[in-house]
Image (tube, rainbow, N blue to C red; front, side):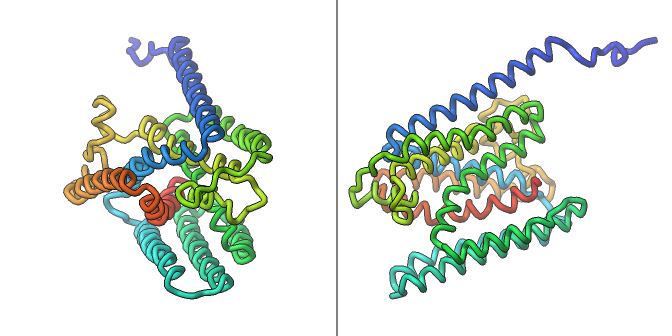
Length: 352
């Protein structure tokens, strides 16, 4: 006698059409968001940069914190050494980075000595990354990381040739890490969308080349010796005076908008962030019960909930700071933001 399982049709035209329509909607959403970001970044780069940082800088950090808490296991087990190394490195590198502006202000160093300090910090960062890769490779003995030492040494050499340019490269590369996170999540949760997404990634360099070609001969942006000046300097106008500041700010803003889009829209919608998918989306996002560190019998529900509430209060404080003194708050934010930049590395490595 045949059971219901025996009579189940393994493939259905209706399901196939639904899958194709969802993939098409996903591709159209990618194209629309990318086109909108490119147009806004090219049209009013300084003004859009101010608005974008004001609205999204704080909230995207909250979503990153929630994501990292979701990825931390309740018990480290065999990954204890990896996580201890990761968290220790984030703490030490962040504290030393915070001290650099104070050293620059109160120590009368020459430009040569200041370059040595920056190169030393960058080298410490690369050593930490190399140690994390080595620890991760030990956890996955069948993976091939033999190419990484050569890349690490070459990167370290480039750092000492131009420490400031190396730091500027980190500013431009960092937003792209969010796209890598999204790729790994699609591979786990929506593999049918992965080919379309990777075709989008291959098209992204062409979009950047088109933007560079169109803006390479534009006149520099207005220099008000204040907020707008800081935005152009953060994008590398001081280090690359031969390049139009309009081009630099536009490219950096475009990448940052994609970065914010991944953390604020894409990952919260795609990532399986709740144990009860039948609940409304807003409850799944804001509820701490979906975090392993809260649900686990030996977890830390009060600590994690307090951390999320405190982080939300910091977002509100950041908005208030931007409203009162945007320039100073922006400077402080981009100094402190190195912590979340560093925190992305170990969690990305755990997904590889």
